[in-house]
Image (cartoon, rainbow, N blue to C red; front, side, top):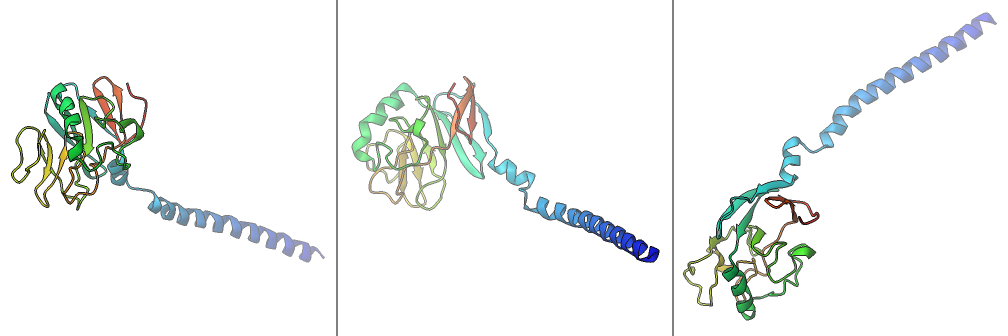
Length: 197
């Protein structure tokens, strides 16, 4: 009878010990497996918001930053540029920005939070080329009224200084306005929606 009690105790001990060792082994195997599914630091950085200092951004100057692997343009428009935006509505495919290519707070005539500062993803909505910034000179081949903007030489699409596409060109929609907000008067955060400063 003593032997039976000893055998049961030994069996229980061995079962418990095996369970504990097996559990620890599963945990050691699970940690690398689970961490494999987490995004790398590089992947997190590619999707992370980008801070842009606009304190020295001059009139007409374009700053090119990278967000999620895409070029994002930040540039300053003059009062004259803003007035001219309203003069070419009949030349544009989507002058009211009806197609959702911008956050709700940028669905206005100038497609920005602050009228003078424009933020655009620098990728043509046709085939993904990067248009050229032409704030003053009329690009060759553009026969319409030109008030400054962007010209895609690959396939001939062109956009105004609010990133709105002209009619009769291959690009089907306006340039994308990324989520952004002002952290302070001179600091812009691209990649997140927030309260405008």
